[in-house]
Structure formats: structure tokens, C-alpha cells
Length: 76
Image 1 (tube, rainbow, N blue to C red):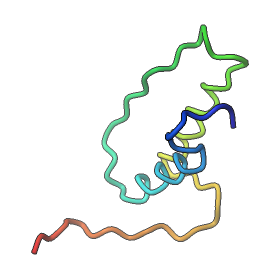
Image 2: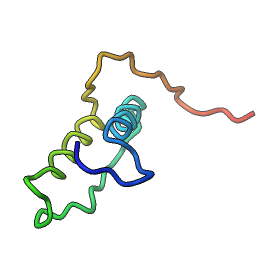
Image 3: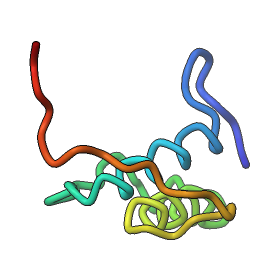
Image 4: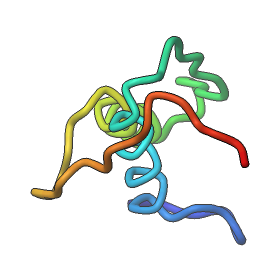
């Protein structure tokens, strides 16, 4: 979906990260930056941002079992 940054995440990798964060139930806030509507050709960047935010709030593109995370991490 569009041009990627060399060495950066692919769209699917970013989406999976968002889904994994959503699975934790621990997201408390979200800041969205670096979206410039004046430079956004045919709204591509805005659509991508919305897709990723939807995944962050629990929308899953695949039928997958969410990971279960412990309530707190225990250090040894």
C-alpha cells in the first residue's frame, strides 16, 4: 500500500504491531503526527493512518486468537 521507507516496517508489519498492542489492553493514549494533508496524494496517507488506528483499537484483519499477556511482568 504505497511507498515504503527503506529498512522500515511494511504495512502488514505495522498493522500486526498495532493488533498486538490492542491485545494487551494497556494502551492509554495515542498521538498521531507527521500527517500533512497538503502533501497527501489522494488521501493515501490518511487512509493508511486510519487503518492502523483501527487495528490499534482492536480491529483485526485476520481471524486470529489474541495473545494473552500477564497482568504484570515478574522479574527473576
